[in-house]
Image 1 (spheres, rainbow, N blue to C red):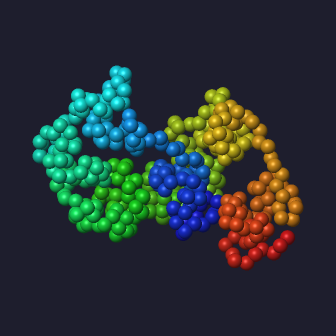
Image 2 (cartoon, one colour):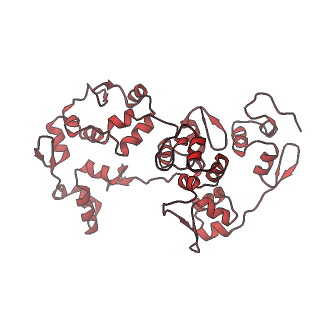
Length: 347
C-alpha cells in the first residue's frame, strides 16, 4: 500500500503513477533527486521525442541510432555540423568509420564486425553493456537457446530481470534506474531500498521524519507545510536552496519554484500548467485571472469551487474526483466517510 500527498491510498506505485499520469521511471527519478511527493506527482512529465533516421525508423536516443548504423556519435555530429544530410551520413559507406577494440585488444572495423566474430547479436551486446556487463562477459557468455537468461554479479541465472530483482528484494524499475545512472550491477542489487521520505538532500538516511527534522532544528509540521508549498527538500530543511535552478516570470522576477511564482500571481499551479500546455505565453498564463464557476452539491448548495465544496464535506478533492471517476454519485462521493464503509450522516 502507498499513499500520495493528498492522503489517497493505492495498492501499488504503478496504480498511483497511472492515476497521476506519470511513468514509474520518471517517479523514481524525481524521488531520487529528493523532490517532494506533491511535485513528483503533479508536475507534467516531459515527453521525449524519438530520434528518427532518414527512413523514419525511431530510436530512443541519438546514441542508439549511431549504434544501429555503426557510426561514432561524435563523427555523426561533426558531419551534421558540416551540412551533410542524415541519409548521407548513415548510408555512405565512407562514413562508417569506427574502430572497436575487444577485451583482448583486437581491433575491428565496427561493433557489428566484432559481434559477428563472437557470434553474439549486436543488440544483445549493447544491452549487456548497458546493464553493467564487462566487454568480456558481453562477448563470451552465450545466449541460452534464445531464452535471454539474465545473470547477476555472482553468476546466478534468471529468466528475467524481474525474477532477479524479486530474489534481491528490490523493484525492477528501481534496478533499471540505478543501472542507467551508472551503478554497478552488484551495487544496484545489494543496496537496500529505504524509505525515501526519511532522507535529506545530502543523501543521509533517518529512522523517521521527526528524527530528520530534529537534526535540522525544524518542526515536522513546518517542514510538511513547506513541502506542500512546493519547496525543494533542501530549502524545506534549511530555509535556503544552494541550487541555482530558479524560475523566472515574464518580468525577470526569480522564484524558487513554479508554485511560488503562481502564488505571487494568485493562480493555482495546475491552472498555470494547463495554460502552458495549451500554448499560452508565460505572461498570459500568469496574468489572466481565473474565472470561478459556481459548483452545486446534491442538495443544491452553491460553492465557489470544487475545493470549497470538498472542504465543507471534509474530504480531499483527489478523493472526490476518484470516486466520481469510478461511478459514484455526487451524494455518495461527498458524504461517505474516508476509509470507512459506512456513510457519513446526511446533512
